[in-house]
Length: 240
Image 1 (cartoon, one colour):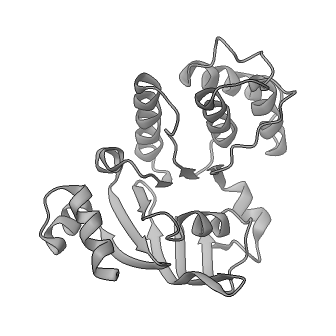
Image 2 (spheres, helix red, strand yellow; image 1 turned 30 degrees about the vertical axis):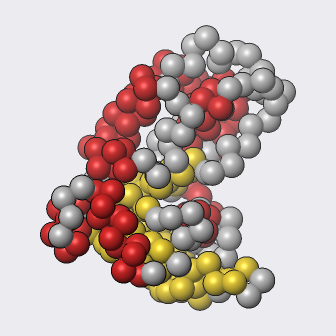
């Protein structure tokens, strides 16, 4: 379970987060949505221990992302906004490296790598160096790295950005399976159809604050809008 309580964060005097708070529960897919600059990526970076908040608490399975970074890192898998591949490593080597960082080795690790390569459709480039990969190929490798250790909590920033239709469908199905295993999924996306297809709960943020939080049906009822895109625009407009 992921919990955020009254997070504040400023950069050079500009407030990126202003008391944001929400929870992402086990066995659910929680969507974190908002306009550009709303604070989504800042929130995710605090949760996966890259940034420290000025105030407030971000925790994963009860562990503080600031004071208990190692315990949090052991419990999360992250697809960040910056995919950051090493150009001289192959896809297989990338995933193997991250698996070893999480204490995996031997046949168990190699079996997981093979399953991820097959599941994410990387067979045709898995043993080629990353230099020259397409955007979609880079994303698939980053997904493999995030999932190789089978973390209980996964955080995805734009998980299908750059993928073709078939690959996007495969990733969405994979996210559902992670949810159905009782794990916690938190993801950010600008694609409203994807949010509607996947999310059990939606958190809308604008100007560093939570402006709406609930199930898709809850948000439709509270805004009086049937279309989820209209729900989003209404919630953000109220904050503005």
